[in-house]
Image 1 (cartoon, helix red, strand yellow):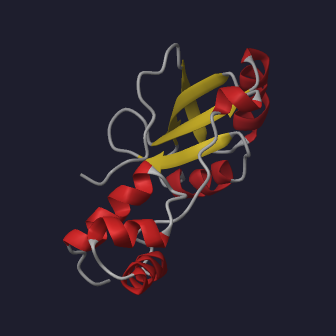
Image 2 (cartoon, rainbow, N blue to C red):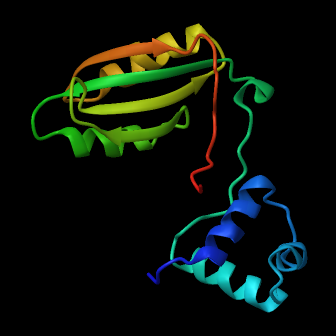
Amino acid sequence: MGKLDHIDFAILGYLQENGKRSYTEIARLLDVSEGTIRTRINRMLKEDVFEFVIHTNPNKIGLHVQAIIGISTKLGMQEEIAIQLNRYNEVRFVGAFSGRHDIIIQAYFKNNEDLVFFVNKKLAKIDGIVSADVNIELKQFKDSFSYVP
């Protein structure tokens, strides 16, 4: 991957502000050609610097319970369990961590009953899970995918 310069970072910043912003508008803001913007965006997409995604508001689509679940696994089973967790539609994020939990997941549910079902019926069936520490979000103060300074 090539090194990103100030124009690349500016492009990323403008797209983070408004992912529907046109190449023409970004080119005008940066005083470069539209072709420059198109080329740089295509290069960054090809090099997996970013991707275009739709970030839905879970509450607006009926998912009112967010849980962060810390999972302790049997030694040597972390990756196998993570792969299984990836298959569940409820799970938005799966990561391996150091510290108290081997895996931490973020998952969304319609209600508490669906969360209880997920923990007691789905997680309970995964061989190698020793324990699950379920934390329900009470109030959200920030939810951002903006990483560009």
